[in-house]
Length: 485
Image 1 (cartoon, one colour):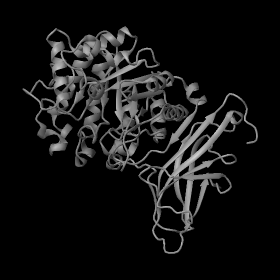
Image 2 (cartoon, rainbow, N blue to C red; image 1 turned 180 degrees about the vertical axis):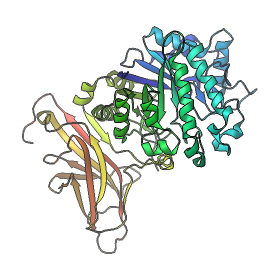
Image 3 (spheres, rainbow, N blue to C red; image 1 turned 90 degrees about the vertical axis):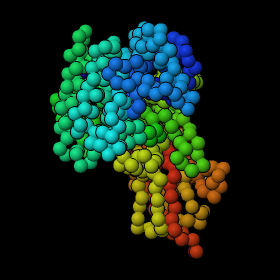
Image 4 (cartoon, rainbow, N blue to C red; image 1 turned 90 degrees about the horizontal axis):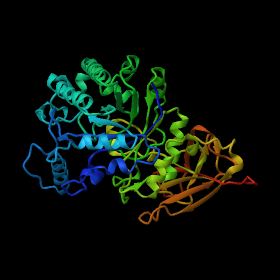
């Protein structure tokens, strides 16, 4: 049955076990739970696995670090020794977290990556030339871990992470095995779902992490529609793992429609960054509360059933607590300031096959060609017009000069009569331009929008084209009516 949830995920590593000096105290062990308690988060998800082990004391597979005598990494040593120090006191880390979550009135779901191999022969992995889930041994291995998480610990459910490849783990199947063995994955999921739901003491939640596009799931051997038609899952969470750039407009309408037809929920995963180090001359920038609010507003408008956040700046600041204070409230998302950003491509998104609108290359001047940037806006600026203080649409334009003749249209209407302020976008790019349109007459509409750009003519002796590196929309509201718009 569908249910609204506000989820926070901790991967057990980056902002948890990598950081605390052993022996681990209970106060340190409780940190992932305590930092979200008192916000709108009602569900905590713990990522129990990396390719080389589990971040709790396990009988079903390899506990992280238990199969090696030493490590040269300070953070791996902290994790190994922290888990071991609790075990020496008769405490299993996962049980410590479950008990604390329940004490704080949070559901606890264990998230299991399905491409890691732990104690198995690594040659079975598709990453190493093996056939992955074609091997019965691989499927049995994950069955054992699912049984342990569902039956031996007081989890409220298990999330099966099919969406970690290729950034976080190997694909379950080789390309040449997908056609024959998609049904093999589905059959395994049937049995896993039965184990989780039919356990003694009450049915557990079955969640899955998947890719945003149906085509990417199909190419990976994930038959989402059969899973839904058979009622095998309670929720689905779309993402591109490791891409990590906030995408406010994942094209998941197909997933929401299919899930709701099957009475399953969709919780989109909100990535934490605006920029990362993959972009030249940039450092990691966390998304602001206004950006997260815009993302939440879009996904509420698309019919999603809740929000799923993770990997926030740590330790949390007021900004992170503020985001988590709002995520559960569609009205807060609807009424607050918004900062919409168009998601950028990365090497990883290209590798997955997840096309994003920018950077947008315009290779040469041609007045007959138009280049679109689609984007989504949840705000109804007509209904809320009297409270709108400002709407700005901004672009980072690379290799542009002021003598270029460029036409920009929003939903088919030229922005030539709107005020455009040009400035330098970055200290390392004094030769590029940041264009900021102050929109008074032509504004984005609620739902899908498209910005179109035409490079009509370049000045004499300047050849080549331009590139749009960023595109953003900011919407600011005030408490009193705005006149003269």
